[in-house]
Length: 406
Image 1 (cartoon, one colour):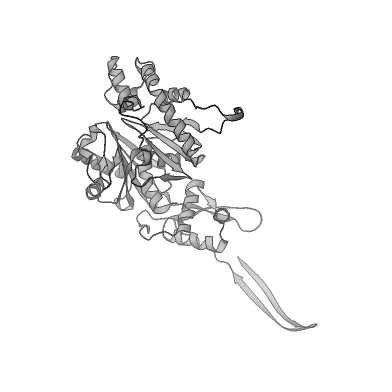
Image 2 (cartoon, rainbow, N blue to C red):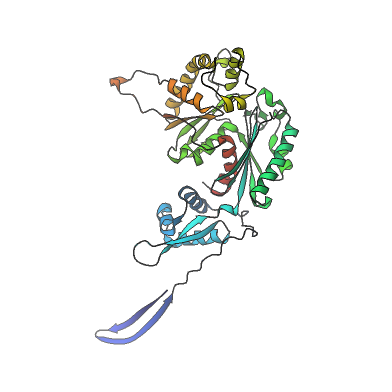
């Protein structure tokens, strides 16, 4: 496209001289990313670059004008950011869209295949592996249903599984930015993990260097309730709730906290580690291991929490007894969280069978008699909205969020 402008210099009514300028506008369409060409993912991104990538992660393919409006930056600044990210292989131009008069505006989109991330979640009865692309799309999830009691045997199985998953999805190892690794338990002062009793072989050690040496990639190590909350914030209830609490019902029972769209880790990575109950009350908290024990007393053979999730029947004898026993402690927790954080939602997730989750939500009661019979707004109670294992998905998204998004 070109434009001609004519400039003239006048003195009174006399034209002294004129100058004609031809201005050319060149639009260079970037070539599609060659899957054999490694994108530049090692140079640190600026805050504005991260914001731009995050907008595209949330919105998908949008025009440059829309990006400018969302970022509140001048079009020239946005154009420069976009061209830099295209040059690094993280963005590309999509189809052109006509918006009013003038030339059609090309859409901008993430290069999904530019980088990938692996997520692993270790529970007492299973291990879960998943892989995500740059847009946080879950490409594949594999559940290893053998209890991960032996650390070395489980790491061997994980390594082989990851190799097969990458091969099936046509992913070269050099495109994997890292691994998020989630495990049940809490962290000690030196980042050693204090995991539940069935995971004793994983406990009282700093797992991160062990994992990085084994898998030969950077590893982000977090509590599984926290990664589940991250997964929920990026591909679940976070689409409409920027402040929520994620309750993780597993062998144990914990929570993850998301405030203003960002996970809250706490000083030691233990935010959401619930210590609301006395030793005498501990067996009445809604940890699923106590439901498994109650079912065994009633003659229902359930091998593990993973088996419980896969085969749960709300009519099993012992289910009503467990709900009645745990409901007061669950009510206390939900009311405490509602008052302390004023969240938009409390998400019931982890390895909780959906049918059991609906029963618990229906039984949960908000306490209090309020002045003028006008109670404060209460959070919405709902089941997890992620499609898959939220802890593993969230673990896979931790490296992506840390490296590319805000």
